[in-house]
Amino acid sequence: MRDAQAKPTQAGPAENGRFDAVIVGAGFAGLCMLHRLRELGLSVRVFERGSGIGGTWFWNRYPGARCDVESMEYSYQFSEELQQEWNWSERFAAQQEILRYLEHVADRFDLRRDIQLDTRVSSAVFDESAGRWTIETDGGARASAKFCIMATGCLSSTSTPRFAGLDSFAGPTFHTGNWPHAPVDFSGKRVGVIGTGSSGVQSIPLIARQAAQLFVFQRTPTYTVPAHNHPLDPGVQERIKGDYAGLRRRAAQMPFGFDTRPGEKLALEATAEERRAEYEDRWARGGLPFISGFADLLYSKDANDTAAEFVRAKIREIVRDPRVAEMLSPRQVIACKRLCIDTGYYETFNRSNVTLIDVSAAPIEAITPRGLRTKNAEYELDCIVFATGFDAMTGALLGIDIRGRGGLSLARKWAEGPRTYLGLATAGFPNLFMITGPGSPSVLSNMVPSIEQHANWIARCIAYLREHELARIEPTALAEDAWVEHVNEVAGGTLFPSCNSWYLGANVPGKPRVFMPYLGFPAYVQKCDEVAAKGYEGFAATP
Ligand SMILES: Cc1cc2nc3c(=O)[nH]c(=O)nc-3n(C[C@H](O)[C@H](O)[C@H](O)COP(=O)(O)OP(=O)(O)OC[C@H]3O[C@@H](n4cnc5c(N)ncnc54)[C@H](O)[C@@H]3O)c2cc1C
Image (cartoon, rainbow, N blue to C red; front, side):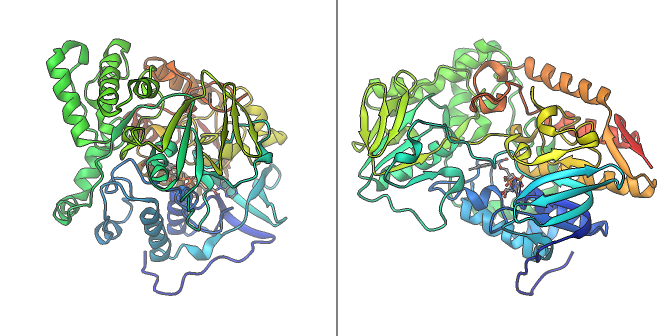
């Protein structure tokens, strides 16, 4: 590890380059993986389609974009020096600050010289005779590598519903997941925001303050808990830094990989008064730990109803128009779609320039040159914001033509849904690794520790192969089948599969409905460690 004082550089084109490893993507995952493989002395090339590093935090520049896991925990732990020297300014850092942090990491560890920007990987094909991957990019450049690591992101492939007339709109359109670099000025404009998931919840209050009129098109109402974001007290930060390792250790024991202060009591065994007190306390503290107040909230519908009703009561309290409050009140299980955290979301609907439109009852029929038409009415708009999310977990992977042994295509193999062993690898694709792939805690966890755990595991596995003079590794079909079954079993014991969430692929028409993430960070880490300790049990490694 060394401090890079020199001006940041960027790798030149890798035409016909041969590398030990190619990494696709330069977000949290790609950067960390590059650092780890460099430590092993491997030659590595990172390809990134964006014109900058940072992944999520490069692309999502919409107003209000920030993390919803606290900054002190939503950060790398691989370097104590880095942990100590970086100061977060807010409880939940905004996009610009997280991007600055990642830029700092890239410079500090001199990562840029192995990263090739503006380069989309179009295919990765395994050559069985050579035992190497051939990676092709949009520009026609090729690289060859023994190991291919997909750090392509769970939420990096944007999804826009195919509305009729989409291209006919005369004004500008924006997707929250691919926001312009120059600030967008909505002053004096009639703006339509489609979608009320996390990005909608974060951006709507800020767009509402600027726009002349804001129309929010909502298909499913969202549960959101106040963030109570605030500047980080330097004293608090110093205290955490005094025992950062302790915080990381405690967080690693939590089901979601960050400190949620889980309640041990069951909601159904608590009195109504105890429940109310617990929910009030968590509402006042703010953030995602709200859903960890009682141990049965994600397992029992009756228990979950008590938390859901608490939030609905808050909505009725906050939103003055009872009709709007009712429209904003979700009916599904709380947290079976990603729980959001917000700054003034429900309050925004008290503004006279904001109109909520329920498009579940009267769906959007078409985008028109002047706006948008639902089954019931027409809305004149100057700009449209698509806060419609992502083709989560598999979108970016399947956006690359990946072919393993015998020309087997990943898209064909996953036609009925993704199949992996530990979310790290998939049978038939030797030496191909995924960071936070489907079947790993990924989006059901604090993703930075999950990413680091994967990068560490992959680096250790590659080191093992070298030590034992093994050329290839891939999961056995048996181990993969058992893991897929286990992931489903764990999800099946919870309330997660009970609604149409992106965890299930339900937001993308035609996508197979399979619950993709794995619930339970500590058990997962233990399993990965056991697999490694037993000589990569469930994998076949060959010379
Ligand atoms: C608005 C927003 C807020 C979030 N907040 C949190 C949070 O608070 N806590 C949390 O745990 N998680 C959060 N997430 C999830 C977030 O995606 C992860 O925490 C993390 O940033 C993922 O890092 P990554 O490197 O795995 O993927 P990404 O950051 O998505 O990076 C993947 C990169 O791969 C590149 N890529 C993809 N395909 C190709 C290709 N074919 N060729 C070349 N390059 C390619 C992409 O351009 C992208 O830059 C948030 C996500 C969003 C969208």
